[in-house]
Image (tube, rainbow, N blue to C red; front, side, top):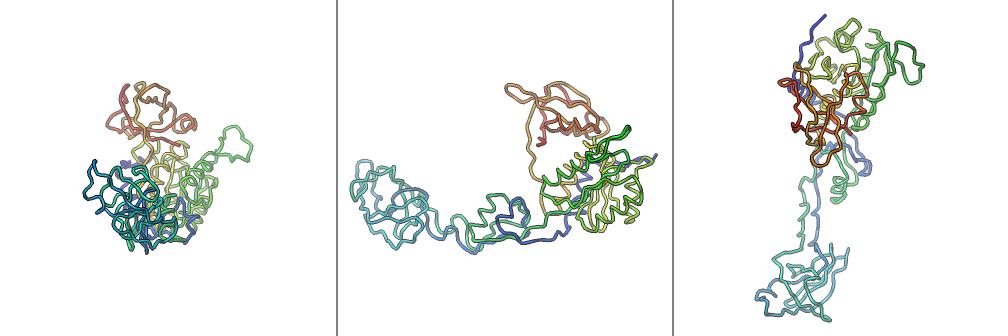
Length: 409
């Protein structure tokens, strides 16, 4: 039996970054309402100042700071109200010495004023106000361009668009934006022992989980699944499905057949479709050791283990990294919880281990325990709240140790 040459996690990440950072996805122009969760394919430059007038941050009175130059607690400063600035309208009012204008939050600050004092800090008597507490220069005023300056870059290419980014684009008058097209993925699951959800389960066979779970995780991450199908353990069938998928997809995943057994055909098919295409075969992790990464027609092609937990594990960590690089994206921050190990347990001493763990209800500091089981057991995922990474340099997690848990939603 052939022995896999195992790459470390750092080596795998470097291979992905070196080979797929410059992949060119097509772009498309979408309305702002359709842009959420997509990736910007252009820099957004503001052609206007935001705001384009001096805007009050509070409900209050605009005045000139020279009127309170000699303020002290014993003096009473009385200023005359000469008008009000209306919300959503320009004002041609101009403040002279000893005068104030009422300005609502967001309203235009009239010429001649360099301060707005909150209405709670004054006493009003008819057409006059008495200032109780002075404010510093330019208090409560957003200057022209104080939020966004004209000709500045508001958002850069590669930014994932959230609701707040849509708001920023709307603020500078953009109605549309160019975004990267969603990466197109084909998922091919192999194994003659697998039975689809529509078939009757016969003795010796198992239900296929990978076509639906890999499809779901890809869609949750915002990618377009071209196909997610079962393919028989037949060399020509796998080769034909792979060639079709490469022709209309940006990334292809083949689940099953990535090891070195008699019916493990994935590596051989990859090399048949394109010679010297395999970048690595084997990762020093558990679960997910027999993973293959290839580059065929400049496109990333993954051979994942058939075991559901291992397949999802590698997709979540390495396939998603590749898809991020294709979109000029850094990896999004994971939701991490620091928790204390409730009971000691052993892990693999030869490989870095992504150990599934379960959080335990506990007063005070969160606690976790190992979820026991092999990589082929789907219950590993249903029982787990997340995972910790245990390096191969140590094969035991001790009770009382604090670890960072990557939460799996």
